[in-house]
Length: 96
Image (cartoon, rainbow, N blue to C red):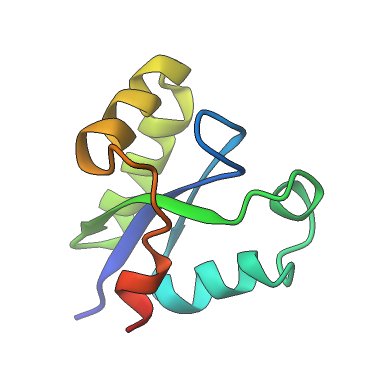
């Protein structure tokens, strides 16, 4: 059984946000950090993992990602602040 993650990257505290899903959070964030993902995160330097949550299926991950993408910015900032009030880069915690 695979695990899926919904994650939010930020350019800086209260900066540009990006929401995505993956089945390998360490690899995917590394790809964003090293600009292997062409497009939005590369253009706007959105490389800091500030929030993530685990989902039990790809369907639930896709549903949650879609939900977060239509949320007001203030709601996204609130969930980040609740779990990561210092906006630290969580990549070091997940990468070991």
